[in-house]
Length: 126
Image 1 (cartoon, helix red, strand yellow):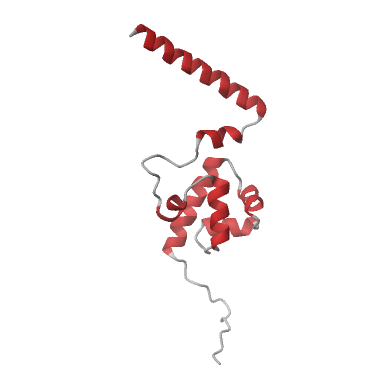
Image 2: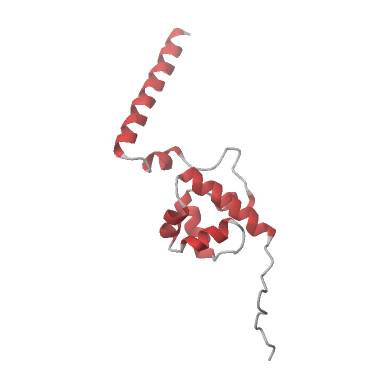
């Protein structure tokens, strides 16, 4: 039976794909308005895991990956490959609005109504 003990000071090499996935996770986390601590809580992991994962120091299980996609409202394609389907960071407007406070949602609704009225006025004038 082979001895699988790690030597003191030995570190597993960082995988480039983990670095890339971690960077996209960080961007998605920031766009979604989460701190590392809040994201860790939402996916049932510790803050140190989120920090290590974002720096590419570790990979993650499939269940953690699925949780990240769900919580951050991003596709697996985005986290794995950076594919966004032609758009920017895939975070829907509905998802962004749902994370606002009630008073912030009122402001967004007021602003949206003004924008829609402006479009209606422009279409009437053409």
